[in-house]
Length: 393
Ligand SMILES: [Zn+2]
Image 1 (spheres, rainbow, N blue to C red):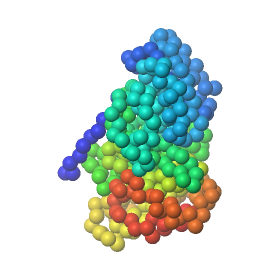
Image 2 (cartoon, protein in one colour):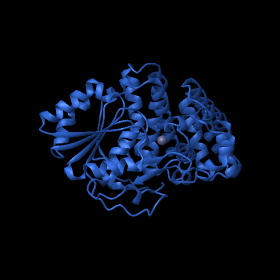
Image 3 (cartoon, rainbow, N blue to C red):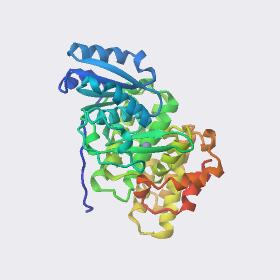
Image 4 (cartoon, rainbow, N blue to C red):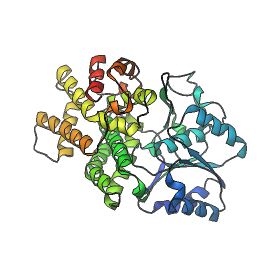
């Protein structure tokens, strides 16, 4: 059996209605909270008044910070500079991946007070993070990134010299993750589609990762089964409580598995694509995953037909297509066909929709070899990576 290392996880409460436990959980961390949310509709929802009234009932005072769009290093540094003197006891992040990542990074730096640029991977001095982090409670309102379970905050600077990089440390993992599938009720279908494909991609990539391990394999398998049963149903009807639970579960598990064993070529490409173009992360994953899976399978057949990832891709093909009898080659085809069918049904736009052109490919490929690409099951050459992009422009 492959050896493995299990890094820190948050304490987790999962289930319909668990948001009601927030005030009691929060009280254990102190009486002064920072609430970080997205710019979206949470403040107008019934959940907001429940959350704030519940905190006040427990004697907890709160400050609110809303994050417009994907967080940048400047946004994090400004928040830390403005809030440091308030001696906040804990941070609650409520929202999609952007809000949770911003909250996670701010919680990491409220006490140390230095710039997040000191620690971002691949840019700047990459100083070790000493901490301490302010306790962080993560409450996802979308089913996608799994940020509630990961040790990294993704920050981006968009534009020609843009980047999309992680502030990563075990100390940044949330103390508590509260996953209440009822919060997904207000997710628009396009957000369900993009986030759901992100979760599915994260599960598939960690399942075939070069660092994959038995423990994460079993988790990823259950997550993929939940996504298979929940994704299209939730996209059609966010009122479906079972589908909400299935996708909230798939997203949580995808965060756990990616934090342990890493990702693959889709996420390798998502970093430069998200830095250079205004493409939501989930859309990148959804639009690329079928083609990237095909290119991986072809490269594995060509280089090493006995590679264990080929057997794993076949298992996933049988799982997602619900055709348990297929031989290995047919199961590979079924996997690619199923992913393509879902991409089509979920109406995930092509890259050109966001301004990506064939002339951009070399620059994207050149910036795709970050940490995720390193755990792809097969080392792809530049032409193979370019082929993933050109098929989806
Ligand atoms: Zn992702």
